[in-house]
Figure (cartoon, rainbow, N blue to C red):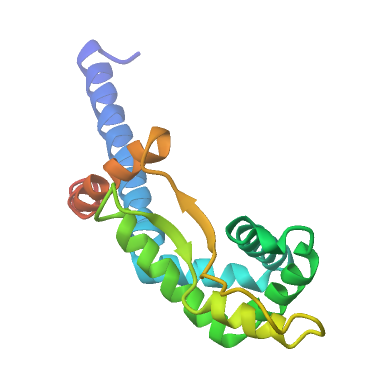
Length: 181
């Protein structure tokens, strides 16, 4: 049978081990978060790699077509050729590089200015899409196509709250990882 002091000592050791385990888990989560979310280049690498997925490319093409039609009512009713042209555009190395750059810019905005427009707009995608469409029969005379927003993160509501917290989290990630690591 264990004496009362020995049981207390065991509980103390168990508490220290539990605290150490929690600290290691927090350090691991912090380190992963610093790499996966806070590192803008790693974040952009992962975002660009999603373009390898057929489903993601289809979704991006559909969003581009939807935004183009929203911006230019003259395109209403002809979304399919626009989506097809966007799909052809997305598989190019030029689009992938520009997409990566756009994700880096979006990341920078999210972590520096909670009130700035946070939209994922791929540079030159509007002009490239217009050139792709102009090659189709009957599509030579087109209105200018702005670079469409593939997605936007609002500065109000829950998204706005997260945007306000992002710089704080960015500033605390490394110190907390060190403390708990």
